[in-house]
Length: 355
Image (cartoon, rainbow, N blue to C red; front, side, top):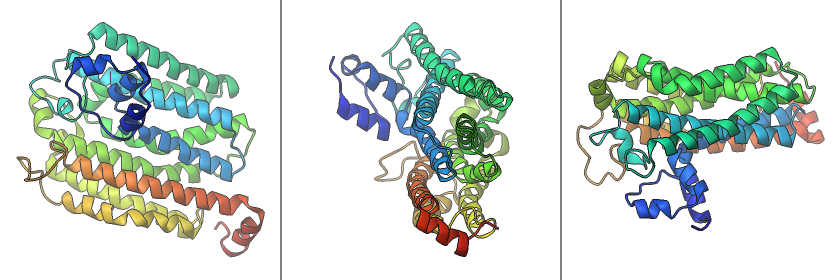
């Protein structure tokens, strides 16, 4: 076994398909973890943390060590959830008969790459690392009650997302809340406490977290529409299963549209953002494409020449969120620089003051 840095990069950016156990066994443990946890998807956690970090820097409450510990811990926590997700679904007999999950990426249990005890060991090690980051936050905020609540909420959601939340049709809502206002507002809150900073902008930060949360949730809703028939047959009551495909498509369209409505509001009403944040509209084309695709039901068979089947709605939502997330972070970098550079900060206070 050798350290496979190209695979680290590849697995962090795209879902990996692999059929050979010999090829799997030759991978280093980091590559296996990145592939098994679907890190191309868990990267959304890093994006949420970067958004928090930039907003904290803008408000003078940023510090590197807490930010890196929280980001790494939350990234590992997301991966831990995915390991448990696969273990739970496999143990309940869900990931059989060419189920949707086994078609788009490596599933170590279903493919025989890991045994169930091995999967549990990976879950335990990942969970311990994620918990240590949470303990760090608790210790450095003197066990603040809000931080305790965030830690407890995250732990419950990690353990209960796959079952029963997803079966109750609450998984999509949990994803929106966690990767949007809760994670972005929560990391900002912890950084503020650690650095004795002001919390006067906290609710604007929470509101600013909603667009990215909607983008992440749009992927999840799209994925659950894509596998609606499989889930219905197996008794998995996701949101699309409970409300129907047509209504779920309209909700997903509304989520994508609201992303741009809320950012526009934050620019022009409270003026929390400067107009430079309108750069996110550079992602409007993939947003429109995703919304248009959601106008019609998912095809029953692979369209000619389509390379990513069975992914359909989730593919366009994923591509849009990658584009939107990139432009959002670029806009936040520029917006933050305008606020922290003395000359431009004075210009903003004169020509674009908060309402």
